[in-house]
Amino acid sequence: MTIFVANNATIMIEGRYVFAQVLDFVSEYEFRKCVKRYNGDYRAHELTCLNQFRHLLFGQLTSCLSIRDICMCLKAHQNRLFHMGFGNTVDHTTLTRANERRDYRIYEDFGQYLIQKVKPLYRDVRLPDIDADNAVFAIDSTSISISIKLCTWALGKYEAGAVKMHTVLSLAGSIPTQIHVTDGLWHDSNFLDMLQTEVNSIYVADKAYVDLEAMRRIHECGSYFILRPKDNMKFDFLEEFTQGKNNEIRVDFVVRLAKSSSRKLYPYDLRMVRVLDTESKEYITFITDNFEISAEDIAAIYRHRWDIEVFFKWIKQNIVIKHLWGYSENAVKTHLWVAICAYLILARIKAEYKSPYSITEIATLVSVSAMAKIPLRELLDAKIDSSNQNVKEQLTLFEQTCES
Image (cartoon, rainbow, N blue to C red; front, side):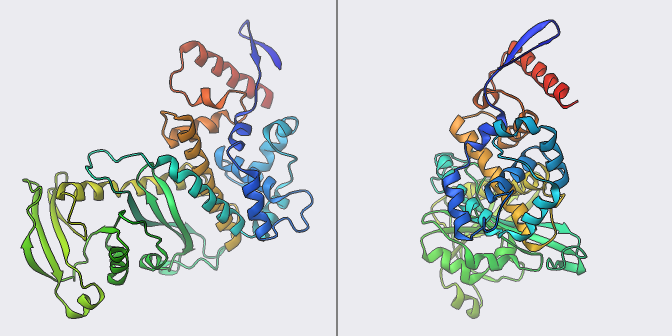
């Protein structure tokens, strides 16, 4: 326990650092299983894979812009490292070398473990304004521009460098359920060959993911899709589907692909819905194999597809992605997967503490309080009275004084 005086008031600081409490949500047992799978700690002396992960997680949660920044911040608090969960810290060259050489699949596998751990926590979350019991997933990708001179492996369009993160996002809680990292030239529709579908779930995507064979696989496994048709797709109109029509619904028809070659790839009937976009005053067309939900729900589900863009924006801006911590393929994928792990850890904290804050807000609170001794549950409770807030402001002042 430490006692100090600020503004003629005695404040007692006790408990554990916020970052150490965040580490409680990292299963060392499961992480070591991933390390053992790829022999990650072979000849590791100063820096084990677990300690490397702690360094990188600290950098993500505190928005450090470089490996050098991470090591500098930790060395400035050498006397707190043990209580923050670190065995020791290393210089930036050792950490950089570990990012370059240690198999990124260690962090990918741990990310997959976290996905399976976090996903059930948001299973009961329902999308607003949608009267459907189906789980809804959005499929999309985001490109991260990088220097082709530094990352010669990451080819993108127009002779530029890029890395793509292909994602399936559960719209219940905005939790990623499948992620695949490639170079920028890998076409989006190829990701559908890797798609692991769930029965009675709805998958929503834009025109880039219109692939008739993939649509057939989704349909035949008992799932549904909602897509924007490509401009060159031709349909035969079979009958009007009148369920739930209103003034915003211009078309709700049962259709079939007109070309015989297309019908061989997808031989089933489709439903075409054309809806008025109240903002742009333009009509938007969807195709789906779901004949049970209303046309309004189809439009509402597609509007929620934009939640995945919010997730991508958060990953690239709130989690440190725009400043890469290495340029080899292994280092970049390590960086991306640690960022995804950080997001999932925060999502797990939100669910288990039942915090009213969003994941973005929790990230902000953890970032500014990582080295404060505040109970994490209390930090994430929105019901904070003014006296507690004053104490926290003084704690922040104390942290700044210690740094100086």
